[in-house]
Structure formats: C-alpha cells, structure tokens
Image 1 (tube, rainbow, N blue to C red):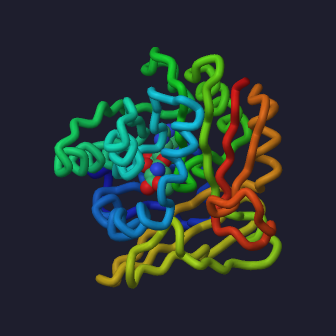
Image 2: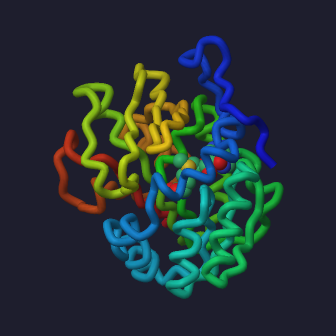
Length: 263
Ligand code: SAM
C-alpha cells in the first residue's frame, strides 16, 4: 500500500537527511514510474553480462539481491540460472518486483527487510550479495553504513562477494554534475539531476514526461570513503570499476561498482 499520495520532505527538504526516509520516498506513483526511468531493455543492453560474468567467474550460485527495487537484477539473475532471494525495505518496491517477476513467469522469493537488521529475517548464507542502482547512498549516518555492511558481511559465506555500486559523487561534488545517462537511467524523456548538493546531501530531481516530479535525498558517498569502510568491516579485497571498466579516469564514470571479496 502507498504510504502517501505525495512525497513528504517537510518544510525544508534539504534538511531531510535521514536513513529511514527512503520508506516515504518510494511512494506508489514513483514506484510505478521507476521502470520508465530505468528502462529494462536498454539497461540490460548497456550493462550486458557484467554482473552475470562476475558471479559466474566466482562460481556463485546463491545470490541475495539486497536492494531489489522493481526486480530488474533479481529477474535477470533468475533467468541466468542463479538462485535468488530478493530483499528490500520498501513494500511498494517489493510488490512491484513480484508483479514484474510474474509477468515473466517467475515467482520471486521476496523478503521485506531493512539492511540494518538483515540478520533478523535472513538466516541463510549466500555466495554473493548485490546492492545496485545507487541504493547504499540512502544511508545517512556512518553508524548505519557500518551496521548495514556488517550485516551483509555476516550473510555471506566465508568466500562470499559483495557487489555494491554508487554514483560518482566525487565528480559531482568537485566538478559539478554531468551525466551521459548511458548505463543506468536509460528511459526516454526523463531527466534526472541533483537539484542540490553538499557534502552531506545530494537531492535528486526526477522529471517525467507527464510532468510529474519526484525526489530522492541521498548521501553523497565518496568513492575512497566507501572503499575504506568496506575494508574496515572486514572485506579483504576491494576492486572498483568505473561504468563497468577496470581502467577509468576518476572524473569520467557516472557510476562506480565495487567488488568486495570476503577472502
Ligand atoms: N536496485 C534497484 C535498481 O537498481 O533499480 C533499486 C534501486 S533504488 C535507487 C534503491 C532501493 O533501495 C529502493 O528499493 C529502496 O527501498 C531500497 N533501500 C534503501 N534503503 C534501504 C534500507 N535501509 N534497507 C532496505 N532497503 C533499502
């Protein structure tokens, strides 16, 4: 069920810097539009088999999609033969993911859970966890980030892999925003840009063709900071790709993808 008709950010939207707030941002109207924004076909084409190849190279079989959203990666991985459990803290997102799965003849195994308390509901161990689509930047405090990463770590098998991505906030903070919109948000006639950014908040505005407007308030994670946190919670090796390439110039990629190996 939708929690509200309109997104609510309070009287001063740039003061809204709260790890719980994602629950109120993914309201039904926005969730319904999410697939226009990400455009499954173009996204599948642009990312190719990057994640599938990484997972296969590691011999992964059981994968936990920790930020399922509308189910794009869960569905792709099921179709590629992986055993997938699909989590998200937003019931609206999970119900859309389930519906999208049904349309493709899949029954997604969905679990509604906040990352910070993942182990309360997820008791299995996985070969890999994916946290994709700039999701981790919904967490605003370092405690929340450490807690969530520790829960991910504990949910992985001893040789498990965490794949976590993020927008290139360093470039936005240091050089201003520019995006090729090639890899992630591929929908036509939709504009996405940070309406406001400082070291503690990136407030993104999403304009849709029917003139509806939605926002997401995110924490602008710096790349080296996240790499450090990953190592500090125990991941032994962290490899970072820029827009799916291992070689990149720091200001160029839209997205970074970190592969964090437990051993
Ligand atoms: N991975 C999907 C994609 O790429 O299309 C969805 C990305 S969407 C930007 C971020 C997702 O993370 C949302 O579905 C949101 O509900 C979820 N999320 C954010 N914070 C969370 C938390 N603390 N616990 C669980 N899920 C969370």
